View: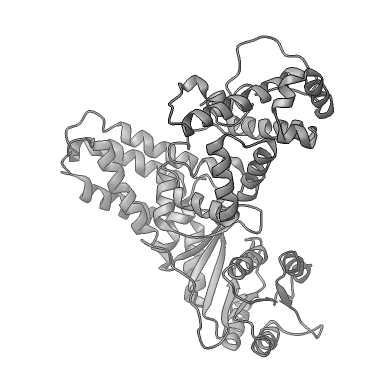
Length: 474
């Protein structure tokens, strides 16, 4: 997400190195590069012009204080302006305190509207809301079944038409009565999309809106259509009246123009973003966090929120104690790997960490493959071997058996075990107040095996070439 845009912003900053302050002369090259980057990212031309003008007005003449160079000052100004064009702050969902909160979902066909309905339902359920999903898309084949599948997967009730020829507005009206009778406090209505905006689509949306009197009308927009997303949002708002947008498939959009254009063009905020195929992958949209990602500075707050969602406090305290006492075992290691998987892809998590946006996708793939290999070896261990790694060190026959069981060679198991033991030793020295040299950190990656197994193939000898750098060697 935003990889190319982040790289171009970095190039712009480089042109300001060595300057005493930002002036009209030395900022022009940087601004031209930023302008090209935004246009290539498919940001609306009018938004680009206004953005460049605002950055120039606020950056020119900025003195460089001690410890801050012009490039850093330029990034500070750009960061503030990025936040500004995306809406300054998170726009939460409107809630109705006196009756069920009604959310009407709109959008073109193929934007991911039904999936977004399920994702939003789960998001609200995790906020302790009793949620009813309403299947009002009667045109697309299997739309109702798709929503029911999503609902059953996460224990969300789905309301669908009782009569075969029911109209969408009738379904919405019946669903509202059902929700009130059964004490639901959140209702999400999934409506039909079209391949393009047409009068029949808009008139149907207006009828559903009149019947349901929604607290939110959210337009689901596919981020891959770039600046057209902003025009689409504006058009829907003018004809139907929307309160915000959900931007889907953002993880597949390296350009990012939609996120930078929607608020400025349509006047309506992005309320959520979809950043993955999993139903859980729906996040509230925070302009300041998105600006940080665009500028390659990571997104620590989102990373922390993901961790808090998955980690139980008791588990965290137990793991902290084991790390301090250097008593963690292979069972603990597998548990941590599975925790990472639940939080999302390894690549997606790494790029939330400041300074890690430059990591090559190939290296990330190597890291993911290495973790799979390690998990395979651990799965071939007995319970005693997982709990007491030292028994493996004492008996080579055990390591040979694990290698055969997992489809790797004994030297691969030796490597994992050696790195694991070094990591234990490193943690023990740290907990005793010592400061071991960097050589004491296994693979410089903090995870056993990640420094030296890159590229291994099951049961296939490798040549003694210079070791290929793995993800954790960075």
